Amino acid sequence: MDIKVIGSGCPDCSRLYENTCRAVERLGLEARVEKVQDLMDIVRLGVMSAPSLMVDGVLVLSGRVAGVDQIAALLSAARD
Image (cartoon, rainbow, N blue to C red):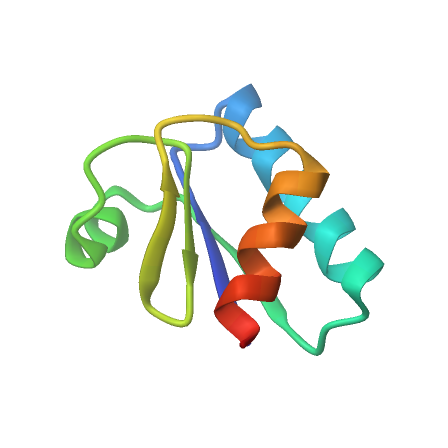
């Protein structure tokens, strides 16, 4: 599973990254979690608001920080 946490590096982006890592660990997933902070990379991904979460190329969360439970549910749904 390829997971991207997208944002400029603001505190909300960092919190989303931390929550995502916790959710991956909780679920025992084999996943690569990457922070995407470069503006050109963000534009290439087509993301318009931050923080955002992308799973296997699909934007699943945008413009807010989700808790560990919600992220775990999103990742479980993406895995199925």
